[in-house]
Image (cartoon, rainbow, N blue to C red; front, side, top):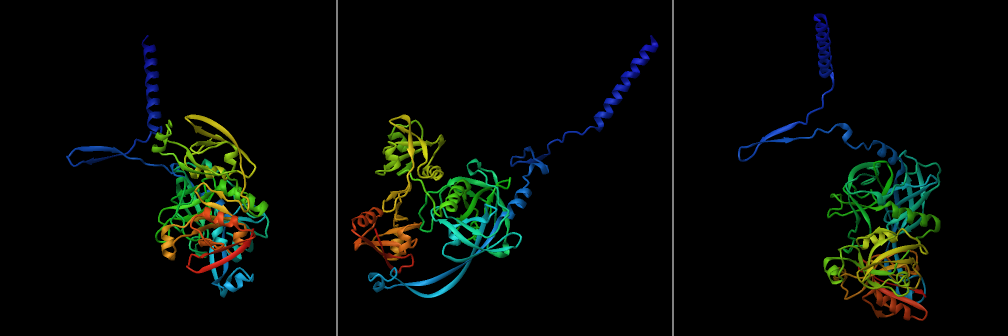
Amino acid sequence: MKNMTTVLLSILAGGLTAFGVVKATAPQPASEPTTVVTDAAGNTVEYRTVNLADSDYPDFTYAAETAVESVVYVEVTVQSQSRSIDPFEFFFGFGNGYGFGQPREQRGSGSGVIIRPDGYIVTNNHVVAGATSIQVTLNNNQQYEATVVGTDPATDVAIIKVDATNLPAISLGNSDALRLGEWVLAIGSPLGAQLRSTITAGIVSAKGRSMPDNSGEFKIESFIQTDAAVNPGNSGGALVNKKGELVGINTAIVSQTGSYTGYSFAVPVNIVKRVADDLMDFGSVKRALLGITMGTVDKKFADEMKLSSVSGVYINEVLKGSAAEKAGLKKNDVIVAIDGQKVTDASSVQAKVNNYHPGDKATITYIRDGKQQEAQVVFQAVIQGEAVVQTDGGVIFYGATLKEADTETLRRLGLKGGVEIVTLSNGKMAEAGAREGSIITYVNGAAVSKPEEVVTKAKKASRAIYVEGVDKNGRSFYFGFGK
C-alpha cells in the first residue's frame, strides 16, 4: 500500500512539473498596453492603447507595382491662334467668320491609362483637346506618337491610340462596388515629366459627387471623390483599388490655389468603360436619354406629396416625345430605383442612365399617389435638330449643351442676357465654329437669353441658322450652318 501511494505521488508530481514547463514556455497572449493619465480634477484615468502589427496595415506594393506599368505620360502640342472677327467673310460665305492671327505653339501634359494591349489608351478630353500632336511615354521609357480615336466632352473622357502591341493593359474593376473609406491609389505624372509615375494613396471620401465647373455652376455628374494627392498633370491618370484594378480616371481637383488641397475627383470606371467602348467602336458616344428634368426629394416635397420617406428624385418636367413620356412617367412622380438599383439624387440617376445605350430597356420604379409602381422605358438618343432637356436643366441642341448664362458671367462680359455653350460634341454647332464657354446673344437677328429661345428661333429658320455672340474672352463671333 505504501508503494502504491509512492507511485501515485510520483505520477502527480511529474504531471505538475510537465504542466509548469509547458505553461512557462508557451507563448503568452500580449496584454493590451495601457496609459495612465491624470485629469484636471486630479483623478487618475487608465486608457487602453492599440499596438498594430504589420499585418494590420494595407499593403499597396502589388497594386502599385502592377498598375504603374499601365499608366503613361501624355505630352501634347496645341497650335493656338488669336482670333478676330471678319463679318465680310462670314456673310459672303468665306470660312466661318473668324479671322486668324499669328499661330502660337503651346505644350501641355497629362496622363493616360492603357486599357487594351493593342494600343488603346484612355485619358481626359481636356488633356488632348485641340492637340496637333500627341506623344506617349510608357513607364519603361518607350515613346510613341498617338492619334485621337474619339472624345466625349460631357464626361471628359477621350481615347487615344498608339501603334504598338502587347502593351501592359490594366485590369478594369467595378466602381459601383467601391465603399466609403476604401483605400485607393492615384497614379500619374503630377506637374510634368519630372514626376512621372508618381503614386499617392488615399481613401474614397465620397461617391456620386458633383463638382463646380469653371463658371461656378454645378454639373450633374457622378464623380468619385478621394483624398489621394492629385495635381495638374495627374489628369487622365489611374485611380486603382488594392487589387490594382482601375476604378476611375483622375480628372480634376477643387482648389483655390491650383494645387492639391485635399480633394480630387475621378470619373468612375463603369462610366469610362461604356464611353470608351462607344468611342472605340463608333468614334462618338451613343448616349441614352430619359428625357426629364428632376430634383432631389427633400422634407418639404415629401410632406406636400405625403411620401413615407425622404428618398428618390421627383420629376419636374417630362419632355414631349421622350422615352419617359412614352413609358407613362408624369410630373411629380418620384423615381426610387432603376433596374432595382436605388437612386438618391439627380447625379445617381444620370450615372445609372449613362450605363445604357439608345434602344436599351430598363425598369423604372417610381411612386405616384403614394403607391409604388413600375414602368418599362426604352431609352432614346439625341436627334440632330431636336432639343433634348438634360437632367440638370441644360438643353442639347445640334451637339451643343446650352444653359442660361449666369449673372456673374454676363456682368463680366457686359451683356444683358445670353445662353452659354457649356459643352460641345459632334454636331453642326461644333462644325460651324462654336466654342465652349461662349455666350450666344442672337439667333437669326433675334436676342436670346434662354436655351429654349435658341431652339425656338432656330426652328423658325427656313434654311440657315446664324448665331452671334461673345466668346469667354469678350471677343465677338459669328457662325452659321444649314438646317
